Each structure stands twice: as structure tokens, then as C-alpha cells.
Image (cartoon, rainbow, N blue to C red; front, side, top):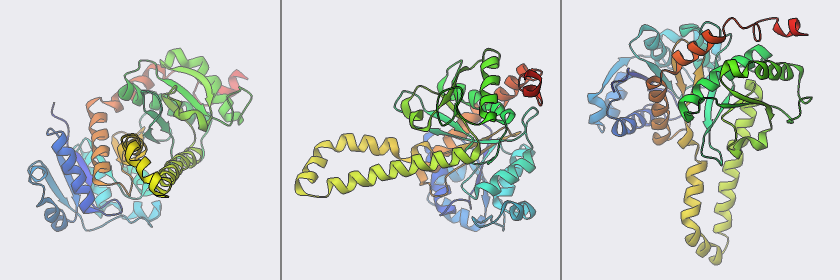
Length: 353
């Protein structure tokens, strides 16, 4: 199947051109139908492409002089976006020259430029940043929002649930994704008023939304594998995500220290190496790299700034899957199906009270 081209912000990420080009090349080797727009400093991109003839043959370069730095505030990035690799990559999506954009650059700037350039979909107030997280079950968990919106109301959370469920159908194939709201407890009386309002709306609209909704989940239960989508505001979601990532690094470092503490431990490591390698693979964030801004009129995927080439390749694979499965069209269809519902329109909570 021929896919639309994917625009790569070649200057984004902690290491910039080298890792972004290596990641795109790795993705191209795994999936030879991928085509790319490589956006950034033309000379540096051409130099990086010398070791990747397969990628060079399937790519077009768009030269830009400007780069959005990690220190740029969103307002600064917006003012100078047109001459930057990030801005041009997103503009390519708007113009139809690419089906999606991938960047490892400044998250706040990427959100601001994407929202201004692509605008939000009809029926969506705010885009949300969604990512896949590993679980103990046979499914990956989708969590949103992870930092795009620090403050949300119940209407936003319901919209996030609709978008997350559409994404989950692509990832899991489940017709009615299991959706939960992140809270400090599972009891209906727990949490803020807006969480309880969102829960009430989703319970009433679950059948109409084609989701399986059963209230709240707590952060320590997310990895059990019995939920497909966890919905929260960007402030709580970002904290939860970083806590999970930090815990994974802590466990990996603790095991490394334990296995090197004595000769007996080193022998034990050799015996248990297959299991520890499996654990390492499962906890490696590069294997789940690629967070998507849902709710825009176009696909924009955020690669972790410190991602390896394998991580960038995974972000590209996520992007391609979103394009192939037409996730934006799926969200639009779901919104159209429930668009006239008074259950989650402004003022619905007051009308029900």
C-alpha cells in the first residue's frame, strides 16, 4: 500500500540530524513503502544520507535555515516558525505535501505551531498528546493528555476519551475500547467535581460512543493490562508518565547494580540473562516512542528528544500506522455520530443538575 509522505523535522531531537536520519533510514529498511520529506539544513542532511542510499532514493529535502531550540518558548517559536524545520514540516502537512509530520523537538513549540497551522478538528476544543505505554497484559495502554493541556474541564476529558478510543481501535482492534479516567481512587465519590462530571457523562454516553466505561482507575493499576485508554489532564498525565519512566530506569539500574555486586551475582546474571533482556526490552522507552497530537486536522507525532535511531524508527512506524488506519477520519466519524448529543455539549452538566 502506498502511503502519503512523512515529513521529518531533521533538526529536532537532542542529537538532531544524525539520529533523525538514521531512524528514518531504519524505518525505511523495515517498510519499503515509506516516502519522506526531510526538512532542515540541506548540506547536513545530504551528508547524513551518504550512508543511507535507500532513504536517499525515497526522500525529498526541504532546506531551512532556522531551528526551534529546546529553550524557545511557544510564543517565540510561533513568531519565527515559518523559517524553521519544525514549522516547515507541519506546513507540509497543511499543504498536502505530506500526510504527517514527525519531530523530536521542543514539545510546547510543536504543540503551539501544530495547533496554529492545522487547527483543531470540528467538535474538539483542544488537541491532546497521547502515547502508548506497556502493560502486563497483551495490550499497550493509550494515555492522554500527557502535557498539552495543564488544565481541563469535563468536556475536554470526554473529548479526550473519544479521541483515545478511536486510537485504541487502531492499536488493539477492540471494537469497544476499555476507557477509564485517572483518579486518586476508584470509588465514584473520589476526585474533583469535574472528574465526577466527566465520569457521569461517559457512563451515560458509553453505548453511543462505543466504549466500555467503568469509571476511574488509579496510577498504580494502569499497567495491569485491563484498560485500553486512560484519560486525564495534561498536568497529571505528564507527572504520571515521568513517574513511570523514572521507576523503569530505577528498576533497571537497581538490577544492574545487584548483578555486579559479587561474583555470585555475576554468575546469576548470566543464568538469568534471557529474562533480564526481555525486561530491558519491555521497559525501553524507545520501543514505545511516538506520542501523537490527537484532535488536529492532520497528524503530528512527537518523538522523544533523547530517542535513539531505533526510537525514531518506532515513531515513524506509529505515524505510518495512523496514516494507514486513517485515525483522523475515524475521530471525525465518531464526533459526527455523537456531535448533537447534549450529554457533553457546553452547559450539559448544569442542565442535568
